[in-house]
Image (cartoon, rainbow, N blue to C red):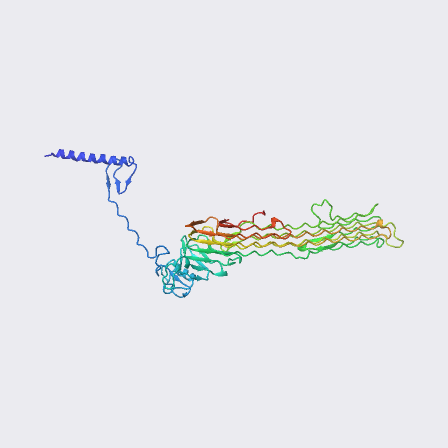
Length: 548
């Protein structure tokens, strides 16, 4: 029989053995590196102290499955799961299987807001495999499950040959998806068909636009965009040449006045208040002739002395006025370049630039006046007067730039939006050709200067003629417009785009840029559009690129 002392020793030995076991286990976990092991907690601050272990909690049961969950191909279509729509329905109906609504937009409104006041929204639309001739707006977070069998009110998915078609014709972009506060929509079993010229510019065709922040998953669906329309040609300047200059006036003969005043200046008024002026002729005196006045306008740099007035006679004869300078031809407008820009309305292309007006021809200088040797007794004694210069022709008007060709865009995704194209097809048509630039107008002809006055039968002392006016410059041609794009997915700035399970994109040809006016070269030809599966546009519309 053990004594009490022996029993106490036995207890101490058991506790020591337990402490050794705990220390070894703790060392195996990393020399006290851990503080909690699943279901266990250490007691005290030292490795050798005891630990206690609780029984692990049983796992939480999985949430009950909703009857509305599942694959769109196989999940049951129930009244509690969504709103039902078919072409033979009535928008006054509640949108149930037995009493469907008629239009997709009405079904979307009911799905987003609930059948009745206070009822939770179903956030889903079941659409028959029929054609709906309407444009729809879909908030993110509302699903559109199309391709449903409706003949026997079965509402099950009918397969790829029975898709729901959204085809509003020229009424606008078929589908717009709005930001739903971070929620995502699924569009399944739907065919989207955009008509020619259905976008806001009247030239482009766009199947779908995702607004900023919108999120969409496109599954087993199709998006078709039609061809873009050709851009309109730029307006031509008038075919008739610009206004011609005025003839200079003739100077007075000698011996007709004590001082023969030089011929008066002539003026041609051109567009913009610009005038071409032939210089006044020099006066005729007894002992000398006056200098002719210069014509206007004159070039800023004028090494040829264009439009200068002629010198009057002195010991020698006078000098004729100098012809005015021809007006500078107008600059041809550069052809359109760049990508254009995307916004809520769709795509905005780039027109060709207008040409510049031609410069006004300079007026000729007035002819120098002459002196008289001896007029007959009793006659006035003044010499012959110089003729005035002819005025220049007006510059030609410019041709206008050609319009851009329409684009064919499958899906437009604005900044911050997200799209996943899953087992779906996007098909685009060809881009429209850019419009040709308009041709400029020919400048007006400069007019001849007037004749100098005569001195009886001594031609050596006749006054001098005014200079001819310069021709007006040819108006510049307009540049050609940008060719339209053919793009499957066009995005702006930072977006998220995913292509899954063999998503297909088929693009048409890009549109050629419009040609510049008839006298233009390659600089005035518009740039060809883009043909690509995916193109990223700048977040902020940029200015046109410099001409190529």
